[in-house]
Image (spheres, rainbow, N blue to C red):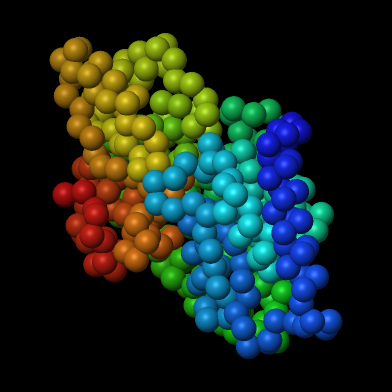
Length: 329
């Protein structure tokens, strides 16, 4: 799809401004080695991986904050300026940032743009149900798959700043140990949910990698992309399932409207079956900045703990490390 005339003019204007600014720099001017790399990330999850690996050697700006849906996000003029001026731009890829894709491909012709999610091996990706020939982009839902993204972040930062490669390697090794420990916690508590209750019904189909990793049946009202529509037939189908299988809880998502999930609850109630909202899950965005849930580890800990407790399993209310502030009771 070709960018609109407005987008082309905007992009051209920003690049022209940057060219003028660069032309005014003294010949041979360069960023001091001690200065942190300035990188821009699209999603909070990508930004968090870069911060964990880069430490003080990297300054990370995330375009999308808490509650922002990356499937429908469109860049602003400020976003374009941030990406053009960054030492590198990192995104998830796999068509997660669908509305940014044309711009990112164009930007790649003039600076380093890295799709970290595409570090997940092809044979470990799941097919995309909404777009033929593409893959499900929600790879962060399986911590062990996300380890490949962290390793790719380490390699990319090391190529940008070779003098700090050892630091990035040490940071990534420590972070990967934490991710592995979180995965062990997740597998342990999720296994405490009775097998017949391991049905996760959510606003959209963002949890397929979670399903494969932990042995849950996952059903989304909408498809993998929030751009897909949820028809009445799909809602009736899920209401039938809730009633027939006596599903006790469904889940809303922090970055997706809860309208369809509430329609399921109302439909089940009309059939004499009570279903509760088991909690709000972080699907395409993390929690609030500055809180544990605003990190990748906290995001997954929150989801796993919330799902386990809502579906009848056993997990501490404050989660894996006792740090959760937003877990469901």
